[in-house]
Image (cartoon, rainbow, N blue to C red; front, side, top):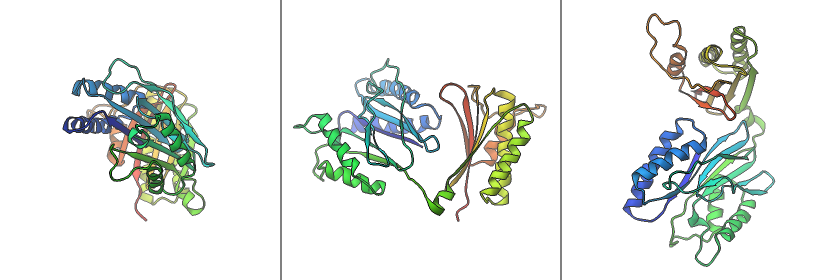
Amino acid sequence: TALVIGDVMGRGVRAAAVMGQLRTAVRAYARLDLPPHEVLQLLDGLATEIDPNQIATCVYAVHDPNEGRLVYASAGHLPILVRDEHGSVLRTDEPTGPPLGTGGWVHTSGSVPLGPGSTAVLYTDGLVERRDQDLDEGIAALERALSGATGTPQVVCDRLVRSAGVTADHDDDVAVLVLQHPARTGPDSDLFRNAALELLGGIEAAPRARAFASGVLTSWRFPADLHDLGVLATSELVANSLQHGTPPMRLRLRRTDRRLIIEVTDGDDHLPRRRRAEPGDESGRGIAIVATIASGWGSRRTPGGGKAVWCEFVLPKG
């Protein structure tokens, strides 16, 4: 899940127009599955082209619940606050680059733990900045409020806004975004599962992967049609990795309450592209098959080199 929050300097129609263009751009860039710092690099160049006199702050973050981490990059924006399951609050001060539109800066990504039971808060300066108070004091006050804030994201938002003294006649715009990684127990936890297999050896890894996927999907009690589609997608993704990738290779299946996600990682950083195979071609149809049967698919480079190719299926309701 990608999260983004930003603030264009100034007010009026021009600032709103710049924000609208940046919002549209960040949604498009998010679909490329790029690391947060690369998204900010693209936004920085675009902001310079839109209006070199208009700058904006932004923080872009990606949460992987199975890794239990939030990877983020900041362009002059205020630090993300993370409250763990015990109530301790961490402030992500680094790394931070200059605002968007300044140009020439190479942004970098950082990460912070965000495991089950944790809450992350992204916000604009209107929540913590006051004319008669140092900005750092406002952030510290927000940390204290967050340490005792429990409940749903909406409840947390309301408590933070109230604690900051924001009222209807507040003289600055305020945006607050709260992300929670719930600690699930009981029957609810059965809806969120994860299974992985190291793909060792040569071509014999393909039948092992199919058998593994079939067993996992059967144990998750998926209907027969979804089971068969999942095994087919696994087969095509693994075959693609065996043919074009390099070790180490890994198959991961994940289910949430709404989706089945199949992902294959390997050590080669060449990202696959969907293409039209000619009638005489002996290869080139795997990704096309996956794109046809799945609800969505994509690929991304992984930290430290290599890539991940994934697809997902929307689960039937009920």
